[in-house]
Length: 225
Ligand code: ADP
Ligand code: ADP
View 1: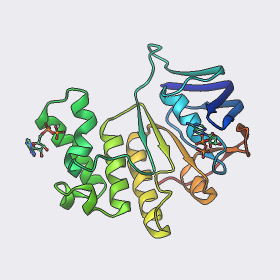
View 2: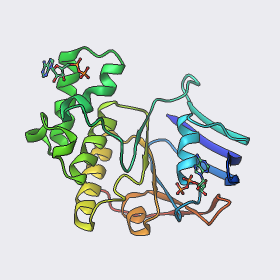
View 3: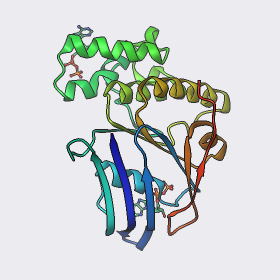
């Protein structure tokens, strides 16, 4: 099991136009195997929190504990972004296989795994296509297939469906939930869309305006497929 616990997090960015406080007094526990949604308005610090969890950023103060309980190691994470997540010069197959290649999985095995996940997101016909040939929804499915194919302990998703039309969004939410139910990975999913948060999350952390922190935790009672 993995453990994610943020206590007393402070994070300020220093830029040319002065300081921007992104997080202040952030407290949060994310439990193993849950689908956690972090909900809040644009600019409240959601992405900053994900960057802290992934280790891309360090807090100015406070502690972010992220470890595997069995051995104390930092769990593996994969991130899915709203855009820019996939390589335009790589085919769908090579995009999905990329993380496996980085981990040294041999070519035959990584293509086998990649094809399995490409099929799960219904893109088998497009495995040799390139990103510019795909719709926005298809491109996000590539990102999701890659994230799951990497088999991380924790999946971090930053408004992956933010740019999609309502129907495509619903369809991809279903696909994501079905992939997630098979794997029960720990997910931290960031969105400003309350409907989406309720649709996807086991628990919601509701953030206020900046300086950002979680104001309320909501348990969502859902019948999972
Ligand atoms: P959200 O994901 O909720 O939209 P962010 O974590 O991206 O919020 O941003 C929180 C605040 O920090 C915002 O005011 C944003 O403009 C600011 N911010 C984010 N990244 C940077 C950065 N690299 N440099 C300066 N300010 C930043
Ligand atoms: P890259 O460096 O582009 O991530 P690789 O080094 O794994 O990819 O492979 C180089 C190219 O050769 C790939 O883009 C891929 O299309 C092609 N290729 C090599 N072997 C295979 C294979 N067994 N099946 C499909 N494509 C292959």
